[in-house]
Image (cartoon, rainbow, N blue to C red; front, side, top):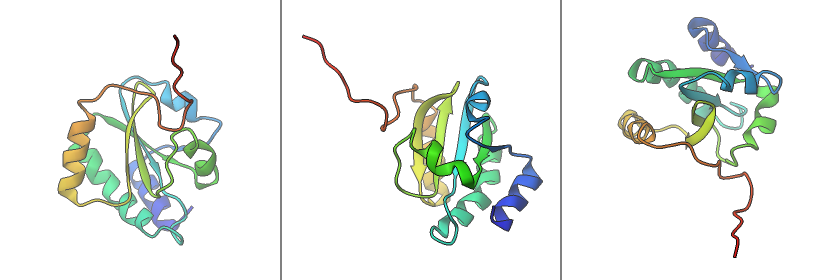
Length: 134
C-alpha cells in the first residue's frame, strides 16, 4: 500500500478491506463509502482522492468509510463494473447506490453526494442482464 494511503488509514482508522472481509463489512446498516484507489503510479489521482476522503467524511458523517486493500481491488471492483480509477462506491445497507470516479472539485463532490443521498439502492451496472418475460 502506498505510504500516503497507509498514513490516511492509520490517522483515520478506516478499515482496510480484503475479499475475505468485504461482505461482512457491507453487512452493517446505513450509508457506506468505499475507496478503490488503483495503483497510484498508474492513477496519480488516487492520492488526491485519499487525501480528500477524510474531508468528505467530515462533510458527510453519516457514511461509514473503508479502503479496499490494493491486492483485492480488481477482484472486488468487478462487482460494480467501473473502469475508471480511483472510484468511490456508495452503498446503503450494503447495497449499491452509485459511484464517483476520478478526482472532482470540492463543489462537485458536495453536489454529487447530496444527490446520491436521495437515491435508493439499485443493481450495480456490472451485474446481470435484464430479463423480461412475456
